[in-house]
Length: 338
Ligand code: NDP
Image 1 (tube, rainbow, N blue to C red):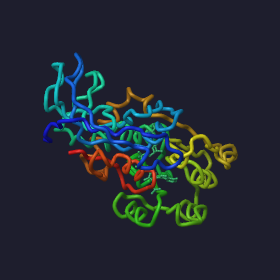
Image 2 (tube, rainbow, N blue to C red):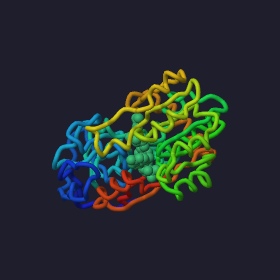
Image 3 (cartoon, rainbow, N blue to C red):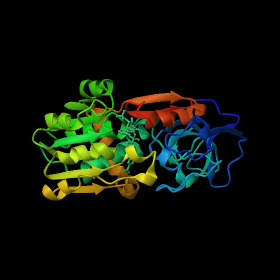
């Protein structure tokens, strides 16, 4: 267990970035730790989840609500209760909450979930069991995609957190062939050798259309898309009759959300009687229990593996966000403050 911090070290949004955030767009401030208000708790933050939405909330207009200049960035995390005013949460309890980019968080107790570390280590609640990772991959692949036995499934940003799980879930759902799209030969080798994808395509390696045709000669039945843009267009070109395209995210657009361009190849949906469906996991809160139970079972059996990449120190929050956006992560990117 980590010792209780003496001050709250908070990373704030210094400037709204244009494109890739600069380190100067983040500032580090130190704040005193106050006693929690009645009904609230104070949490020593242990590990923060670095997610793509952190970049989108840096914009003035954002689906998840814009972060304020001078305020903290939103981030999900796990930590330990330091002070409590409620009976249900005791000092030392491991908890999950929207803790934000800081080392100490004060939150109303209703926003805080007590974790059972006998079920899984607390970081699993950010990764394999995490709402923005495991649960997202589960809803997208097991519900929205409608995978059928023998399907050829393609996943983009496949070496990332959601993508690496989505590929493994496709296999569990009965897919015949699972193809990942990722940046660089090392990530592609990792996907095949260690994560269990059948084929991995390096989108930075050129001739994406040719690589996809070779990997899926009979067409793509399901595409789980985390990226959008050119990768979405290339897969649309290659979809099979009756294909299902799941829009989970569009990270290729997140650095310039004012100029999102729709898919050039969307008429393939009509030609091949295919459908494209999006989803946002926050509308599936009632499915969390079911998703977690299923994911926990597969993780325990070893059928699902969540690779974690730990960066360290709150002062590296901005660096970690840049790492995610530039593809420097394999699996779940976490910022470890312990
Ligand atoms: P990841 O761990 O997948 O990290 C992001 C990855 O995206 C990077 O590692 C990088 O991998 C890839 N990437 C970044 N920029 C580009 C680009 N321009 N073109 C192609 N690939 C790029 O992040 P998450 O697992 O947290 O998120 C994955 C996706 O899931 C995001 O789009 C996110 O918005 C979405 N999401 C959706 C939710 C929903 O409710 N629908 C909930 C949570 C997440 P590489 O090296 O391969 O380029």
